[in-house]
Length: 312
Ligand code: AMP
Image (cartoon, rainbow, N blue to C red; front, side, top):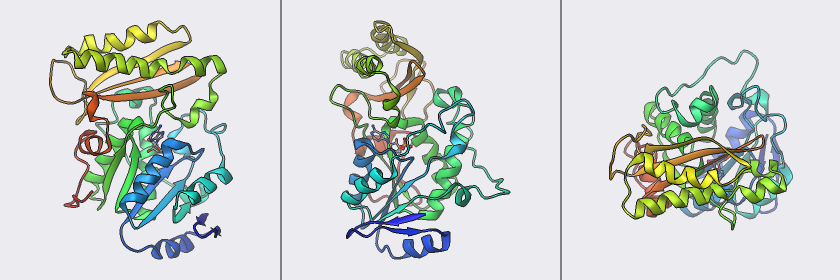
């Protein structure tokens, strides 16, 4: 389905050929924001950037089963379509594409996109098959929405690197833009999954941001030894009994290869921390002043411009 918003018109389109017709009505530069719905201010910061930088804006909402492992939360993932549509309409989005499962994965579906290197380690190691599902659905959604620019969140840093990789390798004529992580006032990175936290877990969860900040402070004071920087973060998390660390990792911001030696190159400090059954993901570029749209776009997972399309 597609929803045409704006001027208080919401139109449901059931067929892909109708979607293509709706897409053809957008002229000029088009920015796209891909989501799984349950929208929050983090998603909306991507929409705002897209609105600022383009003539037309498309948002997509699709909870992609291919990126969830059998033991993950696909069936209970929050679905809040009416509220999402109201938020997107208020933000001035032109078209909202909400494909059905059958439109994305019809019977006989058998084509997959596998980005081989940058998917190793970090979330790729913790969630086997996850990035194959992400890369496949993102490629399909790019084909369907044909963006000039597409907007992604820093919070999913490895996902950004995977998508930059496929855009480069498949010669897709678009620019990837990377928006800083939007946070609650206490520092917790906004996430659709935060609603799974119990009140006690929710109260404890900002420890992740404090751990990132502690490492950033050590970096600012001159520390460059990767193990010491990770240790600074781990020490903070160790003080919280409800938190258990899946991993804390320091990687080169460009290649996402593990940072093993002292370097002044920009680094990505990332971690996944579990509270009960909920895994929360967060990261920060070091030095900390790099955590802005321009530097994130330029650095994270390689250059953000491809195919000679270098305009912002
Ligand atoms: P999701 O709906 O979780 O698949 O996320 C859709 C997009 O929103 C992805 O590019 C995410 O990285 C981005 N996003 C999610 N949370 C945040 C956040 N707190 N700040 C900025 N972007 C975010």
